[in-house]
Image (cartoon, rainbow, N blue to C red):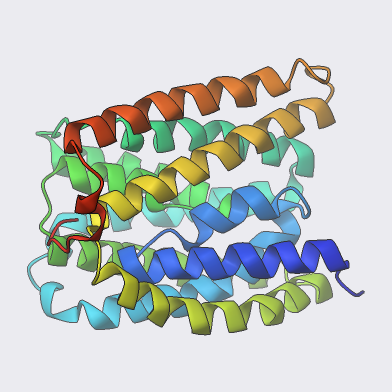
Length: 292
């Protein structure tokens, strides 16, 4: 099977952009790639290809931030404990569930997480260890179905006041573990196909180019602003994908379903306006600053 031309160009373009974001922030590859790629492929075909890329990306993130691992791993241990049953359950769901319903659930799950980050929600959780296990289970299910876990983890760690180095180390530990476990679960469930292999080799050059480019760009601008712009793009794409999924499942008719997309766009534009208004001016975009 040969990937169609339009699908191929779109896939290369979005994975290059996502790799740049991942190189800059330490996460974001799947959360930017999946909403767009799901317009062309099912979770069952897409996730096995992306998880192998994630194994490499997350291993790189962990290696770069290895000095902060000793002071971080105990805080994320409860999340790691919850990952295993979540990944087992999610991998089984991926192998059995209807592809179109999986797309709908993916978009519905991602959208509030993205908007919460865009709104700058900061509410620290006191019982961090108690919340860790159920959070890990939920992240495990989400990751094994979609290869996405950055939004909930970033929301959690930002709320808990992780320093930049600890933030990236925590992400590296958790995401390396979940990607390796998920890749293994996919193998035992027989989810790797020829189409997944073609997708994998199609996007590898984008990853190789995008990661170092993102690391360079983030050294020249504030990471919070860069992250906020990326989330805005993500929200718009997820909103569009949600509308398409509603039409595909005949839950809403076109063009009414696109009202969902319009609502998401309006909410995000308002949040984006509030963010830039608080900054007062645009030159701050290119001022480097140490922040998560």
